[in-house]
Length: 125
Image (cartoon, rainbow, N blue to C red; front, side, top):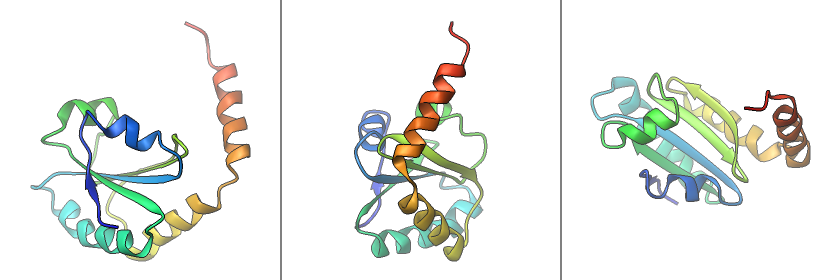
């Protein structure tokens, strides 16, 4: 599967869906983004069970701001609608494979429990 362009209109629906979604926040002028692009595209071919999305931070400024992107490239991983990984910086292929393997191996029952506990501990507005 190749990567898909994500916009403000389809981002939430895509990352909230069941399964694993990786999102690369990038910009055309960004050197590290250009270096990471082929690595990301190659990984998308190796993992047809994972959705690979890209967000052009220049074209989707409001989405980038809502996602609190401060540095590009930034890679985010969602599983079953839960953000489970977020890291700025271009990853080499082996590190990207490690992230994908780790996200696939997550115990989502435990992750949901941790999310619920964190929400219960958060101060109520």
